[in-house]
Image (cartoon, rainbow, N blue to C red; front, side, top):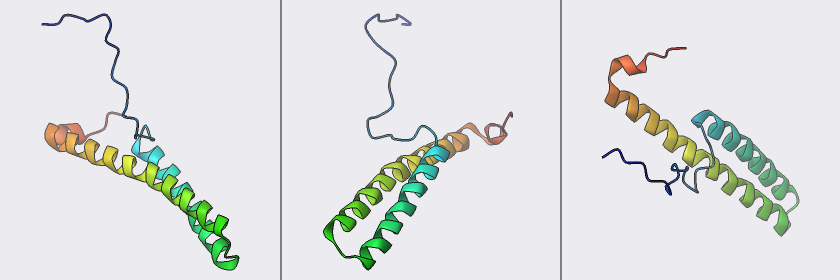
Length: 92
């Protein structure tokens, strides 16, 4: 049953997956987390509402990158464990 269906397109990544690779997700999530921490420091010094709102937005953005990166990393390690020790050797 290898029939190709003409109207079907290849599967895309899920809508919530912001990072293509774990490295990209950890780098971008870390960057956004540093900016969120900086906004919290600014908000402590000048306690206006918009400083806290921006800090929360940057923190949510960092979570939006870190969670998919963590899930991608776990999926990669699970695939390597299932494939056996020969899959863990990289062919660079």
